[in-house]
Image (tube, rainbow, N blue to C red; front, side, top):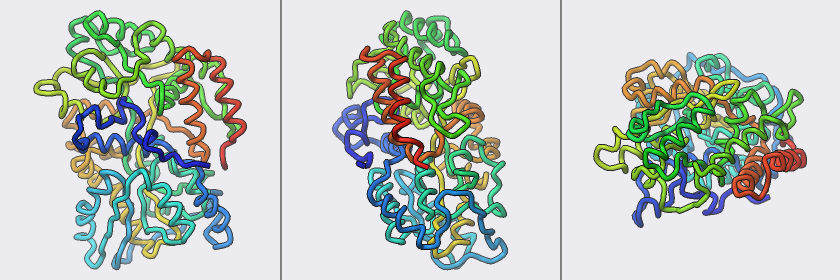
Length: 461
């Protein structure tokens, strides 16, 4: 099985999350764009590579545990001082910033040296799985939030110690990303979710307020067009489009898994979600033309009125929109369906490996990184949104009202189940969404096609 690693997949297309160099000129993309690319890589679980398959074969004989089955975690010695060395792997801009940030932990723990190895998202998955197969893992590693089911299955990850980490401190949906088969195998580090970005000046010109329902959203897009936008909405229908489709399923009270833990895609809610997305293109409110250099320039120019994306785009809008543009856009919660306004939650988790040479120090470092004060300081340093709810009450998070919108959205955001096969399933959804948008399939046919392929692949557990 081929890992999801090609350049085309890594950079995807020029939409909200993955801007190509063309969108920013020939020079290397700025930091916030590199960050966006890293997010895109983090949100997709890699397929089970040959390295991981080998690890799954080797590990049961190594006494590493039950490979994702329920397992009682071992307590951490909270009284003993932590000394020695601590090896940490981290990806993207987090990997670049963590070494300096970790000096604060070292200062509080004399005799401990934290060594952070930055790793590119494009090689991170294979590097981790290779380290598992070779029993050469670091003590701690950052991972994409949708990798947990896959890694837990290897039996190489240490269960989260209950005497050190308080599950209730985290957003429930964030905690869901670390729990597999009744056991938590890590800790949420930072989170992100989707909200509606819109041109505030165009909305004011049309006499519009942010939409609260599906019906109002379509009227909102039409109003933005009347105010001068060519596209009322810029909607994704290619790589990563599942991140816009799943919220539409959940907002109707639908689910993509049944009570027995199997995939459930051929449902009325999925059909309605696909039809809702398709309707924007059919009615001329969104365009299926993909121009690598068009977005976000089209939003800056007022040709696009609104789009859905994550918190990293606040900085992108302010940096590249030009003088005064910060006052021309705003964000609003995801419009609600019949069952609410839930959105997709992503981000990154932290894991400690069973082969960690400094286990107590590893877990205490993870605990420190998820302390509310540390989470707020990390937000100031790199703008990652805290996974710990109490951190959102700190002044660092309250300074920008737009950031607060993401905090509210996180309270009811959801994630796909932590199944090892999610990467394969998400690609199938992307392919079928594209067919629907381009008129090559109906929503009903797409839902059946997704279900058929999901049944063939299974959950991977």
